[in-house]
Image (tube, rainbow, N blue to C red; front, side, top):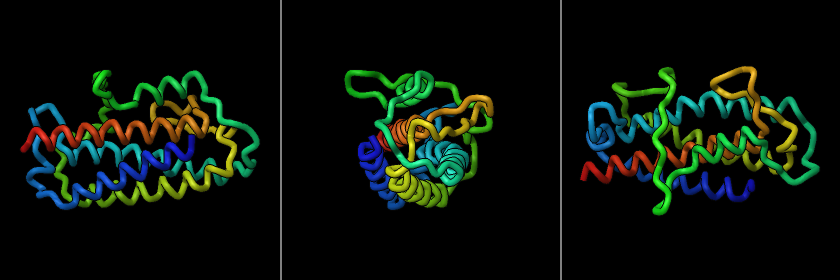
Length: 179
């Protein structure tokens, strides 16, 4: 699983670096007044990344237990992770409402958003490397919507990385529509 998540993150990193070559006017284009621009998609991910990267790192530092077993996804964690998977040609991307504190619509954004996202993906790769020696089942991470709910470390990684893929695809669709 970790190897799959590393590959997904590496692909996300390559794709996001390509955005640096685009004009800011194109990156700020919206298909409609209520939809997000490519930069708003990435800023949304940055907002989540600021929370989850810190939480993952902190929980891995606190719990030093080495990995002893194969990762088995939890019921809630598996549900959250799978709900973030981007659509495929056979499966449509299900629209979801975002929380207002994670909604960047109408923000003034520039390419610093992309630079932060790239830095977050590089940090994610470092965390995934470290996680290969960690107990993905017994290390628990808090989530943004409730301090009472905690997910297994493996499910937290899956959720964040699938969420990144989902919104990177959304950003690419916006950019393609702008052409």
